[in-house]
Each structure stands twice: as C-alpha cells, then as structure tokens.
Amino acid sequence: MLGDLLAVTLLIFLSGEAGSPYSSLYLVVIAYATLVAGKNFGVAATAISTIFYVGMIDLAIFDLIPFGLINTRIGAMNFRSAVVVLGFITVSYLSATFIRPAVAVSPGAGGKERLPCRSSRVQR
Image (cartoon, rainbow, N blue to C red; front, side, top):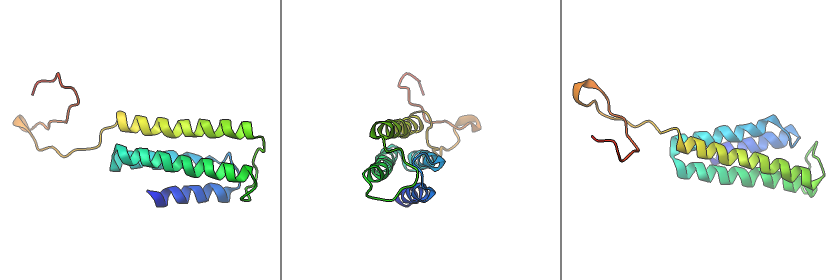
C-alpha cells in the first residue's frame, strides 16, 4: 500500500502540475486498501494520501521543490487540496460502509449460501 501511494505521488510530481489527472489514482489505492485489507488500512491509506498530496502541494507553494504549473495563490491551492482530501475521505467511507468484503461461507441447508448480515433484527 505504501509503495502504491509513493508511486502515485511520484507520478503526480513527474507530471509537473498540481491539477494532474493522476491524483485520482489515490482514490483507487484508498478503495483497494479498504476492500482488501479492511477499514483500518483504508483509514491509514486516506491519512497517508492526504499527507503525501497536501505535503507535495505545500512544498511546491513555498518553492522547496520544483513543481511545474502551480497556482501560487495559497487560497486557491488550499481550496483544491481541501476538495481532493474530501474526495479521499468520501471514497474511504463509502468503500468501508457499503461494500462488504467477500466472506467464504459454506453452503447451508438446501444448497443455499448464507451471507453475513449486519442487522441484529434478522432471525437465523
């Protein structure tokens, strides 16, 4: 997971612009981490993605790293960063809440498989 996030960050840096379309790859890594490894890894991927993306933008704003086309108005870049981070959090929440990881269940009576149920009102 960390290697994937570093690769996405490097790809955005090499593309040379803050509005790179490659920033959407963070969402793929966050969703993948949540679905494969669970909610805790999804939250970790969200936090690390936020640190990498916002850190790269902030380093570029203060001219600490060479970064191509960047809007030097701090307010505009902070707004863009906030929107991107909100996307990170939204994808993490949605993938953790609405998509359950596949669970191997042995066939029940009648050859039907039982799926895990979150509701406590369902009688078994």
